[in-house]
Image 1 (cartoon, rainbow, N blue to C red):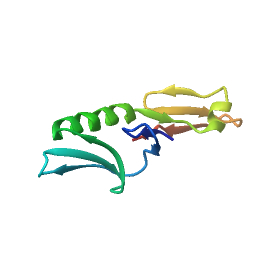
Image 2 (tube, rainbow, N blue to C red):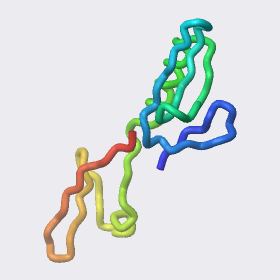
Image 3 (cartoon, one colour):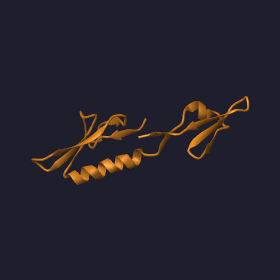
Image 4 (cartoon, one colour):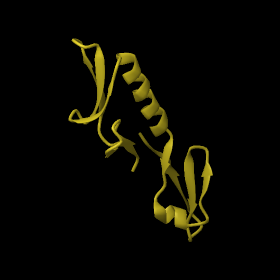
Amino acid sequence: MLSIRTQDRMALVPYNQPINIVYIEQSGKSEIYWNKVGLLGKYATKERALEVLEEIETACMGKIIIAKPILDNSAWYYKGRAIVLPQNNGDIEILPLVYQM
């Protein structure tokens, strides 16, 4: 599973919960939270927090998860947006790709 390192570099958190920006009006600073409780980082401006969130999104988009049994079968191949997995009886199984976000 994909993980995100906190700004202080002391922890890795799984990317499986919502990530939110909290804007602190009094100071004009912003904080990014994972699952509304885990602080990922503090930023001087809302714009910088948005840039970091976009970097996380860019890094997480397009990650393809392929089950190990499929990888162990050397006969599989990629076509379009699916994995084609030939079966022993001559049939084929078409598996759509799953993206980890």
